[in-house]
Length: 155
Image (cartoon, rainbow, N blue to C red; front, side, top):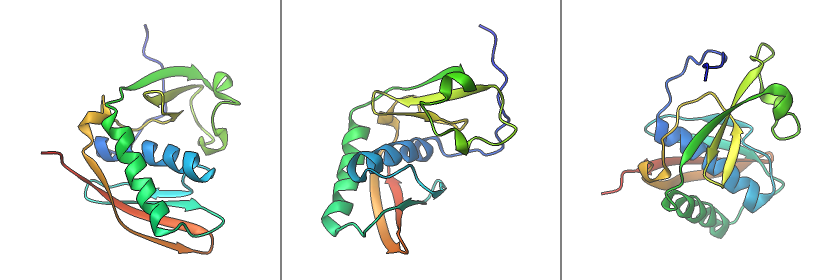
């Protein structure tokens, strides 16, 4: 199969942390019925993600997020890719996040049967490569929940 032409990607993400971003996004959608993050800063050492929520989650709900993400990671899910056209992606994905000059071919990244989204980033091949997800702090202001987290390497 001929390699499809995609937009260039100028970032070099930490694969485990970037894959975790996908898992956190779907976790928040599942637990809080919110959208994907409104802002994210993903780095190898620690990362942060912002979500629009109507109210501040309780400490128990924050712990539930951490537990849920770790449960998904422990499922050892394969991370796979598929190439489709923008037309095929309409109705399945948030197309407004694509840049104006996006290529006609887009890449769908799947974390097992848990999450799928359009993404040009780098990912692990299996969630077993991620480690343990740890929320190090969180804050809530003006309808935005900010979660700061890191990954602990499994021994």
